[in-house]
Image (cartoon, rainbow, N blue to C red; front, side):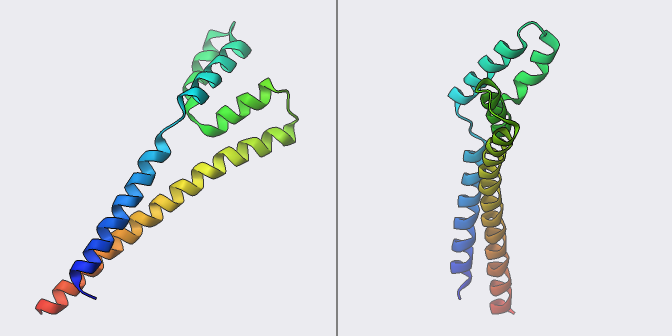
Amino acid sequence: MRPIAYAGLGFACLAAGFYLQQTSMDFNPADRARCEANVAAAYGANAETKGALLPKCGEPGFVAMMDARVANLSAQQTAIAIANANRSGLMNDLLGYALIGAGVGGLAAAAVSRFRRSG
């Protein structure tokens, strides 16, 4: 395979991996607002606890936990909701990292192929 093909594949994989990483950090503002309202309703009188929990409203698992608490779900149902929320984020991260790794590998293969052709 030609070095340009390896390099093109490498750049494409890098771009896709970084895109997935950036989009996985985006969080639905409606989920955050709902979580903040749930925390305020549950811990409104305790400013210290509320202040410690509000920054966690950007985490999918915490949002799922607060939703489960408001809905009065059982411990098992709450655990399932948290696990599902965290699993989707983890899979997106793993796919992004795999694409970044493949992109680095493609660029390395292009460099090695170029070096062998010139040597």
